[in-house]
Amino acid sequence: MMLLYNIGIKLYSFFVLVASLFNNKAKLWVQGRKNIAFIRVEGSIWFHFASLGEFEQGRPILEAMRNLHPTKKIVVTFFSPSGYEIRKNTSLADYVYYLPLDTPGNARRFIDAINPEMAVFTKYEYWYHFFNETRKRHIPLYIVSGIFRPGQVFFKWYGGFNRRILKLVSHFFVQDEASKQLLQGIDITNATVSGDTRFDRVWANAQNPKTLPLIEEFKNGQKLFIAGSTWPQDEALLAKLVTDYPDWKFIFAPHEIPEEKVNTLMNLLPEGTAIRFSDLAKVKGERLKSKGEASAMNHEPSTVNYLNLQSLIIDNIGMLSSLYAYGDIAYIGGGFGVGIHNTLEAAAFGLPVIFGPNYQKFNEAKELIKLKAGFSINNEAELKGIVETLVNDEGFYSFTRKKILGYVEENVGATEAIMSFIDK
Image (cartoon, rainbow, N blue to C red; front, side, top):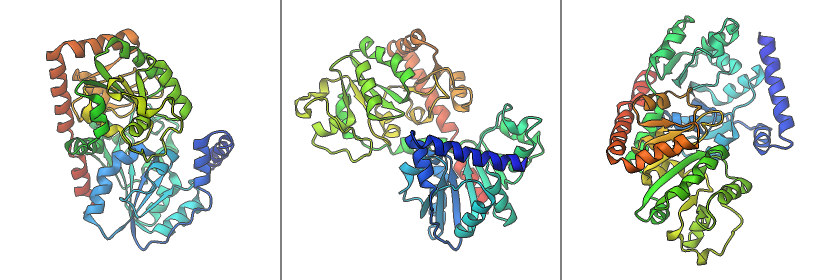
């Protein structure tokens, strides 16, 4: 199996190299790993995140470790460009790198350079050679906010090699009892149910929300529907709500913001009713300093009375978690594709959350549905039905807000539980 694993790693690298010829994300993945010069550190704390979502999930642990050990060097690695490119300059780390390909030589060289005193991986990503190198050097390796499901390869008859990887972990901090029981079923007992650190992150964000004057002015005292991390399938359904609720404002924050996709969304909305955030900033004489700023204008900004516009499209990365502070109802995208995005950011502000049918891998979505504070829809009719109820039934809406806020608050505390264990 080791031979097959090593061959699989090489094949994955080859296919990404081929994809990099026509895919920008793959190109960044390849270029980011070329000739990485690791700075030698005499003792560090190593955090690894698959992507941006895992960074935000593990951020409370990262912040707590930075505060507790301000003189320690912190090294952060990412697997995906969507994490590295956005957080490569984070002040929470001293060094930020792409994680090298998981080979024995790369693992030795990387760990020789950063000399970690401990390693913290968030949620998932299990790399045999990196894990094995930490074990050989007696470096504690922790998985935080881990979650396991029966269908994963670890629990299949043919998953022996994958179980070997899990057994290299010093301790698992899992989100729920079901995950702990699954690990015990394969003779892994070094696990603690600590909950999900995302609750700590979103709760802290909701207690001190970032002020966004342009959003407040755009809302102009009206009710606001926020569609976060949307994909084209989501947007095709949501665009029809804009016409149905002319007294509401709408904000769309697409998951991907290349020019052509933003233009497609603009064309879905009623003509003359929408504006991009970058254009709105120009209207106000503010320059949006973001790589996501649109380069083209469809109109002269000085002529736009933006207070009369109904929809705003966010064409930058990084605002969404703060937008929810101004919302009344949220729709979370991805449920008509590989899976929904972060519902907890909206839930922490008490917003009822609506999402598509593919949510089964997300405990919080299932819990919100049980509480009748989250709503899964399969089609346009179901979307219109739940929105109509939330808009017109004040009692139901208030009940939903109370339930969702209580749910988030009850689940805060994973960071404290984890830190009290690993800092020993």
